[in-house]
Length: 78
Image (cartoon, rainbow, N blue to C red; front, side, top):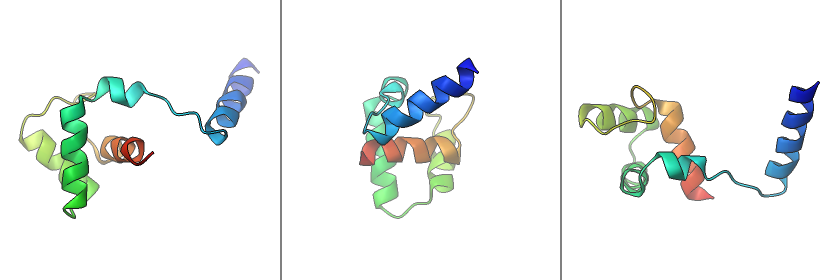
């Protein structure tokens, strides 16, 4: 029951415009800029993740994934 109430409260905050800064803290500004720049150049999210992994850019987890890139791009667009 607590989990349901917590989730509902978070959804209300998000609908009201609240944004978590967690990704800004976990992904360095230079990497966020690089991701946005690659996306603007037309690269797919998967290609961006693959490029970051190939270049040895430290990831939030074990490696870069398409979902992580999407989250960074959504945060940058907000």
